[in-house]
Image (cartoon, rainbow, N blue to C red; front, side, top):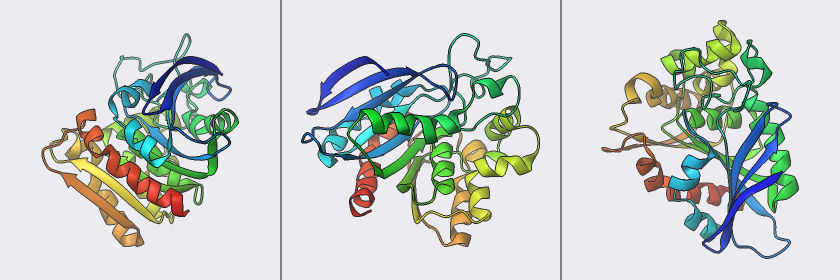
Length: 280
């Protein structure tokens, strides 16, 4: 692991790092904020998964999480959204919603993407091991959150790893990718055209098939241009009601899909996670 940069912030350290990933076969970059703490102290970890077109940098620069993480004593980890570099295939038409910056947090099985697009393994296995080895992280106390495509990732990862995460939340998540254009394109391209194989990467389908978490926190802007066609939070609401999952779904009037929206409610989410990490 190589340190790209480090800056003091709110008494802690905001770092950016890169390493050679065995999962993706590429160099991967991620950011970690470590709040001020006593030497030898292990701290809970919040994972943040970003959305389409993003890298680690979007939330790191715009998320406004450091002050609250410093207050609550939370390590904040932000990985990239896809492999990158020479030889990594992209969308043939150069579209923003598939390929580079759009890994959808799955392990691709379809050529040519199966050689590098292993974001599920990277986020759930390789990067956690790296964080545990190099940072004062208490891996018995983890939570996960994300935005849009990253909200999809956070929900599906938490649902398929019962007991690993104390809590899960999302901003404007893609809750049912099997049913919307973004998801259908990505899941077909990465996993093939059998919808049965998509269900393990679809939060609503996972809940319908019996996966459970204790509760969920979702914030969604009412002025989000992707709300009706791509995000469909009502489908998650219906699934949670049928399954008996306690869902807090906040529809935020006049907020959009941007980091202005995310940063406004970031502290609410981090406090929600901290309450569950402390009591876990």
